[in-house]
Image (tube, rainbow, N blue to C red; front, side, top):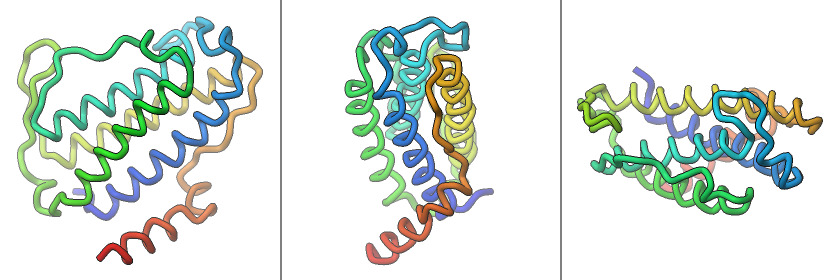
Length: 177
């Protein structure tokens, strides 16, 4: 099992990488933002919308809710709209992780999926799934940026560490105690 401290760092990294990619995407033209590129989710907008919506769904599930659908990607006409939505999800996840107890990671975590089926996993596995999901799609965003002729930024975990992310997050957690 992964410790709660590692999950908190993983979420710090997730938002660091997200913000770097969103800054690059904010420089895209509206045409580039929406251009179909033949990916899992057609455009940069659709891929980022999927990532933001997936995080929101998992946050709602962590809160004991089981949303039956996702917002439409069309609700995100630009980077600013997706950033606003995603930032509120980040606040919710940070609050959730702040009060989460280590032993809760082992507890059964159940939710109802979009098909109406009930799924149960240990909480740590659901959180690990979410972080893996986000990393997977960040790689797609990097590839889509290249296809558009934009210069992607490095979003590797060790780049974040070299930039001081984990030193900062560890210091802020220490001062919060």
